[in-house]
Image (cartoon, rainbow, N blue to C red; front, side, top):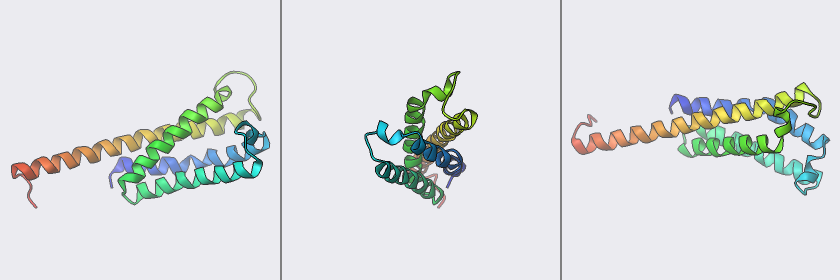
Amino acid sequence: MNRPARLAAWLSIASFIGIVPHVMEDLRYGQAANFHMTTVQFELFSGIVVLATAGAAMLCLAGWKSGAVGVLLIGLLWSVFGAADHYRAFLPGAFRDGLSSRAWVCLIVTFQIAAAVAATTSLLQSRESATSRAFNMRTGRDRR
């Protein structure tokens, strides 16, 4: 497993610092209604998304390429949809509970963007090394 894959996984896991309190805050502010869900449905949906985020990170730490793909896709989803849904957190003026609410959104978006970039780097490096191995095997430069 390469260094960017480990970094991507740990950045994704670190984003739980913002995800957990933010999801609880979403419930308090009635975010479920914005998605046309009941509170229980929103809790289930949030739990599935959090488990998928953790699962992709764990696969990435285990060295699976699918884990890096998962961290990349989930990181993009968290970042894009989180920023779009909570754009007011990035603008001047009041946002929910103030600084803590803004910090949670910023933590999620920042960590998930960084995780997606690291996962992309990991996937590109693994592709380059696979291409190099194939080239070396064809040209007889493989020393195995």
